[in-house]
Length: 141
Image 1 (cartoon, rainbow, N blue to C red):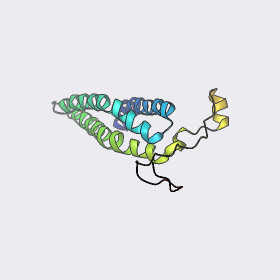
Image 2: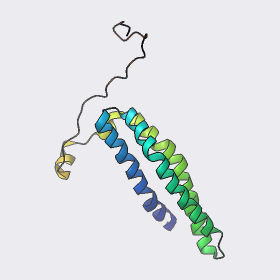
Image 3: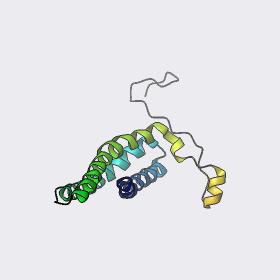
Image 4: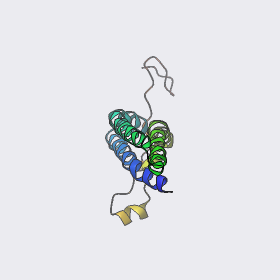
């Protein structure tokens, strides 16, 4: 239970950092897919580097002589490694891209409670077809 609580505290700030960057890109572009690509592209290396520093720090603590510290440190090191590779690099971007505009939906009652603007119900802009490919109306570009 302690390892879970410690990992939750360590990894939540990185998740918030990634998602806030994705949200900034969404506000700028209006496209969730483009926001995910740009947000992860700008923050991915920094966050993965920080996670690797933490992983190696706890892995070195796991090689110490104290059994309780070694168990705790190896659990934390493995949790950080799983979070940095599987969760932050694969699951979070895939889920955000799959959910599309529903990521940014905020009900009116929650917006009133938080004293912010309610979410914008605008639909995602259509992705542009490559040149030479007909659009829905049969026109080519």
